[in-house]
Image (cartoon, rainbow, N blue to C red):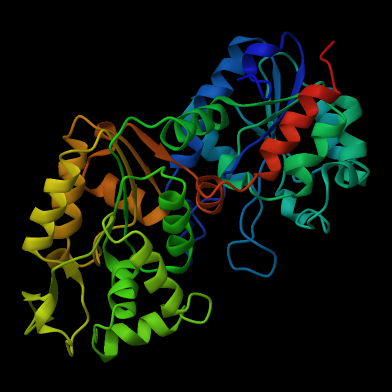
Length: 410
């Protein structure tokens, strides 16, 4: 890509590469074993390419946050990566001390060394500029014994943290294949989407979705926005519908930052482009029961969209050439309320539209439905994805852009 370097721009022969990845994995709370290795699998192409280009690889990653139960060392991560690669991965319980530096210096072509959790560095998560971070002891100790910095941690690309941006000031730097792919695919739906372009938002949060919806419609990126879950309920509440006590309690948790008046204003400005449910599924006597919009308020939780909404949405989606998907349509964890998610996700997966999905619960639902291969691109981003969509600059991308202008590879 023109704005920043990629793996195509450097010669990695016999070079020591610092590879920053996002291997912040879901763990079993009791055993601390890794439950899902999807994030690792997505970085394998970058690692294999570096190995094929005769590099020496040093992996930088984090797990959890300080004082959190999942804040652990990275030795199990190294073992999991070793199994996925079917190749030896060494681990050192150090980051930039004498042990780590000794092993880095002794690396041979094709070796992989996994360092300990970078969030054990006291200043790792401080929000500073790349230049300020570059003056830290961590960066100053490792960069003289390294040749290239490769960042493949798109899921953390919105964070201005030391290991993510500090090296870009002192080493030739580039994006890994996952980072490159994420930016390329997201630009496809935001800068030059095939039209009509449609965005479907669901899930159990609505504050971020409201900001995103307004941006997409104001800038004519989206032709239609289809809402399910809590985002839909927030819009309906803003239009004067009494959703029922249980549903409205959930809305109140986020209402302070997104007043109903503001949501109503967004709807009225774009009412021809925002589509809302016309029926819902509730749990009555342990069974799925569907009710119409006119039947509100309900004394029960609204756990899913109903058949009429599914039919309505699939008809709209049938016109789409580009679809962005974020959030299940209902409480997907409960089997009897998987219908909305299952029917709409299957419809999108089997359509001819270019489709992108993002968000942890969205991806989990896609995997459970065995639709991964049918979605054009699945994004690893959470916060980075949201910021990218609304046009915010991502700290990591900006640092890579600056580095391209600042440092030439020799």
